[in-house]
Image: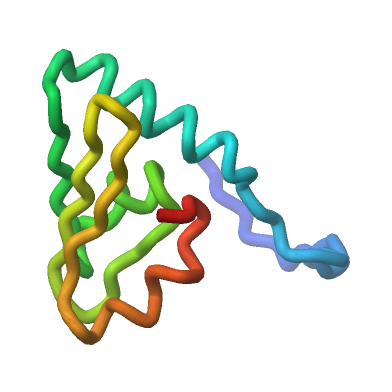
Length: 97
């Protein structure tokens, strides 16, 4: 087998005009499905700097400096429990509290 390396030009894809955003309704649907599929009264989602994907998928919140918990209640309750260093990030999450 022969391998040939070639230089290629990188296409100019341009820059996005606006920042993509996930609609709040998408986060609300994800949370509702998660709690409904769990069959529990409350669902607890753990997150930290290295393991933030689940909480980010459900809320848009990404803990950067310390651990966090997301509590989802069957009646639509949503609570994020986090430390002082993450509090500033909660208002910019995609899913309002």
